[in-house]
Length: 306
Length: 257
Image 1 (cartoon, rainbow over the protein chains, first blue to last red):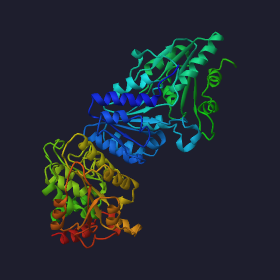
Image 2: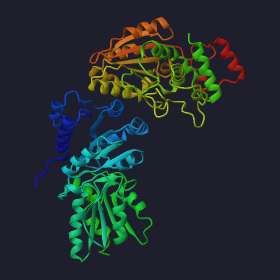
Image 3: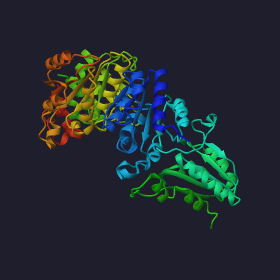
Image 4: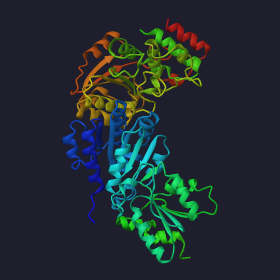
């Protein structure tokens, strides 16, 4: 199946929303310049390639929000989130200003570029601040719908655009901000999948079913706030949960799930995520495998082979 | 000039038991004249759409801003009396979520200026003709974001922006090669250098600023004296963040008569 790239969907959504809303303005840090030209042409004066100065871009976007605009900041995850964290904290969140940060290059999408271009603590950083939202769409329709739903609400929203997508077709009516999606129902094990890892979750389920296990899959396009109700309901039933996420195990989805299920007795919880620095080169898939973010990793975590 | 404002600043520090007197004294003259003669505002409606914006990027000089905001009706005497008190709205850095007339939360240096650049750009995008003033310290000019924002402002031709630099010599204490006019000229700005304690020069410089929606941004570099007005406080010694004792208070007030 040939899928539209996430970044292309970002450009297409900016164009459509920007045409309808004169307050949408886009600042980029010298990436995606060419694919955003249709937006630049359709919305003159509302597109700026500000260059390589991420903290300033964040402060500027907050200043633009102060005047009533809906700013969108777009560049590579570690530079805009980690380097500019104080600007995010003070200029946006503390002051109660609203806007949108749309990243590429999260986790180890830029696998061969090494640690300077990896970013797997973005959920934790954003969640630590009041008035933030984190959206992790891993198919184009998810980004399109969730951006339109949230971009001008009263929060600072991070949209983490992955380079790779899951391959599932999701009913658009199920894609709602703050809502998880129960993609498969089951009774023995809950797999909570974030981003492209949904693909591995579905493959693992197929294998586990061959062993006679009944697997429930919960997919979470909204990372923060997490759909605690659906997760609690599912884990109450299965008492066994594997979380699979391309994020540091500290401060990621797994930590939130642990808090959500704390009052359910006898739960076995395994969090598949990134532990420590990723130092290897290789393909995205190879680095995923290294971190056990793979079908094999999920099967091992499920624990039925013991 | 502005001894009354200076006395109020000292009173606030003595009663609140905190605050930066010298940093406020170096900017009180330019801020007071800006509000009195140039800035458009409505203290009864601080968020009035037609207002000009003033952002104190050098947040630790906020006592100068507070006494001027009090003068123009943004704040009450009670607000002033509650400086640095629990339940009060005035702390050692301006907080836009609490202080009517404070446009940004500043204190961490290097934030207010790029924030102001965004305000200027946002206003231009919406075809609004408000002017944006922002004040940074010379020490603050050690922050990289100052020069990022300087570069961006010039390239975006933010002619609706006027920067004031408080050149009180703090930066040169550490980094003596500090030719600020040359630096700002190199970044392509319209540069004026004035005596920041001369009413005549401040008024002339602010009057000289040509605002336009698209044009060269303006910087007024004000040569100032940290602690200006009280010989004991002037310079870069122990007074940066010190509370006067009773005897010192009397000496200061005597000098400000």
